Amino acid sequence: MPIAFAYTLIVLLIITSGLLTMLVLLHRGKGGGLSSMFGGGVSTNLAGSSVAEKNLDRYTILVGIVWFACIVGLGLWLKLAVAS
Image 1 (cartoon, one colour):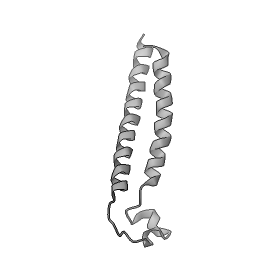
Image 2 (cartoon, helix red, strand yellow; image 1 turned 90 degrees about the vertical axis):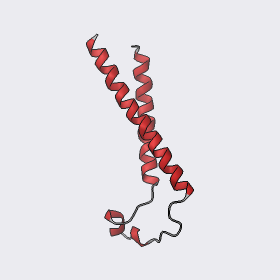
Image 3 (tube, one colour; image 1 turned 135 degrees about the horizontal axis):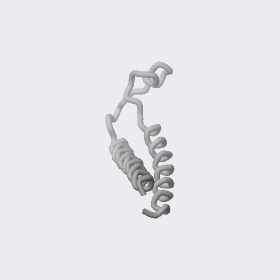
Image 4 (tube, one colour; image 1 turned 45 degrees about the vertical axis):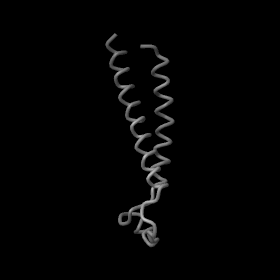
């Protein structure tokens, strides 16, 4: 396999890692845990899960799948590169 494939996967992995971190941090806390210890649990949940939250969940799952595929692809490429 060409080395350009590995570089493409590495760039995609870096982009999806940053995007996944940002998407996870955008999620609203569900209460309890560390966020409520510092006053984050005081806010009320009026609307439940909105359309924006559902879309954020979908985007997070999609980026997570792409991230995982990049990890698997790099592992397979590395295995083939070492074998040859």
